[in-house]
Image 1: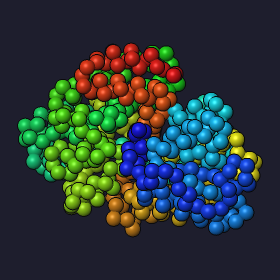
Image 2 (image 1 turned 135 degrees about the vertical axis):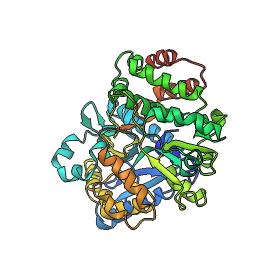
Image 3 (image 1 turned 60 degrees about the vertical axis):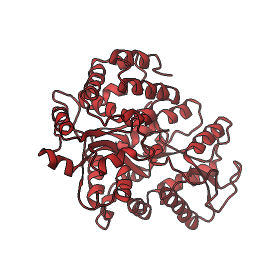
Image 4 (image 1 turned 60 degrees about the horizontal axis):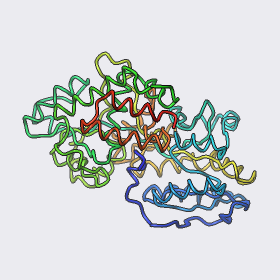
Length: 433
């Protein structure tokens, strides 16, 4: 399962595809465009209504939508693309999967289109283009919402030990024994899910060495995982684990069940590093934890002596739509018109805000004031605006093959069954695969 959005969409709707939209035939040869996307609410509703508004305004250039569960979508889209029968609009997370599409010649290069439509590019956060860019060329339209990883904390727990939220990595290590002495786990972690562990490494790599450290891995540089900064980050991670920084038995706790979130809002853990999407579920499931003002949140703190910019973040800088290279010229034009109109409209942005999410559109903050979640939305928006780098989650940035090896080795690292150097050696073996 993919990290940010994949995690948020674990509990999806129908078991098979449905067609929410009306319009042209979904066959590859028709004049109308086709669009496959995920079937969970409330996201599905926003996507469907966005498409329907476009169809109403463009009766001669319709889009037909088909929805799938998360895992079913991943299987279906891969099969369809391999068979040359992809929908016109290919929805995804960018990064490593997009790179595989590009290498197979299955998606169009949109670089010149963005150059010719600067108003569209200027509507989007610059940070959203990283996962859409392969070898200096843009192959996808950034869309929907940004989902940074956030350091959440329980204000009540900090009051119990008379401390403030950590401002540095050193503060984190100092807080660990204080919380443990009070019978409060310093950090909640759904370690059985593996990708939750990965968030920690993403920030440690960045705060110690900046985005260049993982970029070298993404660029398939030989032995990139053996960078001294990487070894240092892996070592610091194990130091926190050995200091009992995480809830006891974290390796058997799942994130998909939201058990890690429950540990935070019930006061059993003081802090949790997790995706921005968890705010909504904690607000819904945590009683008065959020509404009562007990939840705090912040960006990951800097590390003393680290070279990474403290404004940097990691997670999902957006979702992405590519255009199938097998689509007809008419279908491609419909897709591009969709990109430049309803997909980035004020109405669509407002609907995303109503789901408790932050659209990747500049100026989307104008819709925050009316939301009960205004403070959190402003916080997430501020991260996106101020981040020098918004790095994509590693398991989305890498190829599916390398991502699985990564998650397996991260699990072993957290269980202390391999050393930092062994982790690096194992990962170096799959660089570029």
